[in-house]
Amino acid sequence: MNHPDQIAVSIDALYVATVEICRPPNNYFDTSLITDLADVFARLDEDEACRAIVLCSEGRHFCAGANLGGTGNAQQLEAGQGGDLYREAVRIFSGALPVVAAVQGAAIGGGLGLACAADFRVASPRSRFVANFSLLGFHHGFGLTVTLPRIVGNQHAQSMLYTGRRVTGDEALAIGLCDRLVEPELIRAEAQDMAAEIARAAPLAVRSIRETLRGGLAAQVREATLREDAEQERLRETIDFTEGIAATADRRVPRFVGR
Image (cartoon, rainbow, N blue to C red; front, side):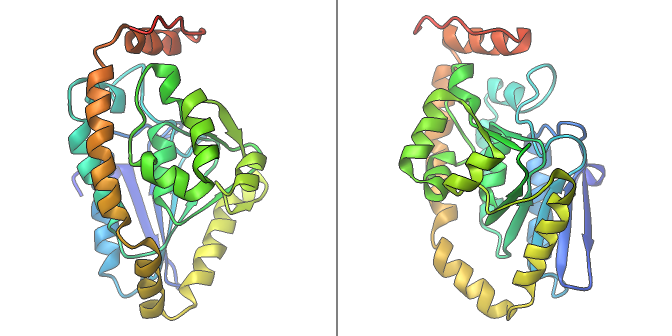
């Protein structure tokens, strides 16, 4: 790992690894974080003491997406580095171990994409899931083209992506975006219980079943992110993208003009 201070890893006696993103309170991500996360997953794949992973974050939000007020994903995408980020993201999808995401607070934009890379999501009624790309005048990324319809169905995915609206924990449970709903203080414990339940099964069988069910998901995400990145590059040059970023920073309703 290049930046070991931004991810904490521990493995318990139940063969569950807890992988915690340490960029509180919002846990914005960029290429370096996704690279480190992919490195951690690759190492855990080879660790016989680990059979399942809990992906969680320190602080208020699971992952609030791009840091529009400073350095982060949006700025990297503006500099044309989205392809680098997505290449590293595909490595996460290529992992062999089941992943349970503990989603406290918000999973926004790319943070939603990261949550959807997991096999399961545990949330609370206070959690919210937001694909806010259209409100930025931008195209979605992180393979959501593939993962979101796969999880919630095409109609719900279209609704989220076209409008950029918030989905609460209760609605997320109803549409299948989260798998278990508990009180906020119990999210991580519930995710660990779910991972431990998986880890009690025969590990070789679980890996084999997961490979069958997920099939060519990583390859599908790789192909999808090529299109996503190209559209992000195109839309980055529009007036609407500039307006979307400015409106978000100013906390106001954007005034899009279609150019």
